[in-house]
Length: 248
Image (cartoon, rainbow, N blue to C red; front, side):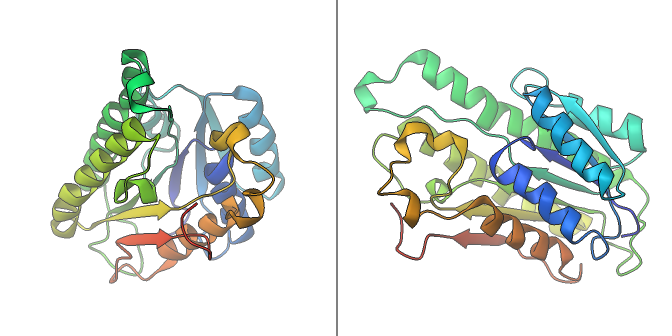
């Protein structure tokens, strides 16, 4: 696409931030995109916006908690740029602990962001892409790309992760259904399932003995951008990537 509009959620930290940095590195290959970045922390977004703009790309930011207003990110993107070509959904939360010690509040907190907001974001993005004019010079039936960064926990259970795994299994179900629609409507749906990546979500659980075994956010970002750059006649439907030593 020529100057595609890309919305990235959870852009302030972790994998989302690394995706932004990878796009900047490969901006010419990506068609000099226009970026809309969302995250809960304004200072993170402002710092990243400055770097993107210094690289010569158009970039707007929106501090936002997706749990409260998931569709606002799509509305703001359309108001600013008039279209949406690619959504990279990296925002997510997790509460972890022994099953019998997890609370109703832990359940609501996780499911509201990881399931409810994810569904509404997918719905709004898909509707926009399906109905907008195609600008791709490679394939006239290609309406856009939706990337969800789920987790290896979307297909493998882990102790202390009952709520998190449930939310990620739910995301996988949504993605599998939407891929059936996407094949008819020219929208690629890409499920990225990373294993252990050193991001702020790990917090104090990223102990010194585990850190050397973990992947880095840029490892995942490179794969995501590579999938987006694949010719639209092909779709990289799933990316499952683990540390070389396996799951931690």
